[in-house]
Length: 530
Image (cartoon, rainbow, N blue to C red):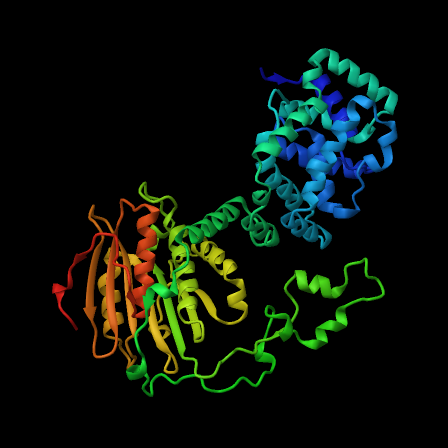
């Protein structure tokens, strides 16, 4: 049976909860106010059954790490025999276990650099509670309005002395029963954790990414969109290069496509903020402070903020081919639309598709000088909204952006010159609605102003008719190839979308898959060749 605490009971429970916390901290008024603010936010998000002690301990671990002192180090002899074993188990089985997790160590490092202050710290605690709180007993809960009334008194007055707390605990235990004491509930909580919690999944890479980029993911919708985008990429999965046979390119290497055969000479243009440690610029070592090893020095701070400089020694590898992949999104209002057949709105799965295609092409051409450019076509009324969506994709490819491997732009009109680079082999992927296919077909197969058609071009359109997948393939000129694929507006499941992605990557690279496509194709190549 679920019991909701009355306001007096809640006030007493809050004071006793801090007494039972595992980390010993002398909290001043400001620290208590910050803790109660975070606790109120978490209660408002549905964690009404979680005690204040658990939130206080998680906050202490994130902010102080190994320097946080457990209460057993200071108060063990003063504990009653009836509570000593349970409190020691709480410290070792939960708090000590948390400190051993590599993911939590990363969170602690973020806290040391000042990245977890205020809302980011509350969010980090919430991410932990999302996995922990389902295992905490729910027989006892509080009402958020009661918490708002009780918080000011706890912040201003602080905790009573030990004798008053013991009297308060006896009184509350008589009202609620011994089984609802925090100590008993904590024991059941630890039992549930030992049987059900997967500790390795407590904090995911998506959680860490969100907290590292909190300043850019500064709204709930951006954080949700980022999580969805990373989940879409994960579900698409990588392509297996062994399953794709790439064409020989000897006959295609004419004067229009010069290979990158110069050995890199270095210089300011060949520096990057990520790389192997053997490529670290030696002058960066000057930031290491050996005189104060226990404090964060400038080298550590630059490392956490991705500001250390590395030589980009593999830029322009010998005999690597230059390739330019142009990816265009031209969906109009459909870009931010959701239809019942798809799990996410178009912007999420389309950008997840481009993200996965980018990774796959890098895997297929590991030794080539690849460059990507992503263009989102928009209108003046949609520009701000569309640009915020595109920034999510740019954030996930931030390392590639810093290395100059990919660029992003939001345009109201497409510049045909983006398709052509006389020094690079061109590839193009256009995602549009069905009304724009004809215009893109003409541009990709019959370039104007003396430009050359891409070696491989694709249009992926969204049809308004209830039809299976449609494919139209045409050979273009004597060099390039062009293909079309149309998706039904009513939607596809993710297995079909993943198969579409693999088909796109294979077509774009001009290769052949060793496995046949599993989705239904209607060949409309009777339209003829160009």
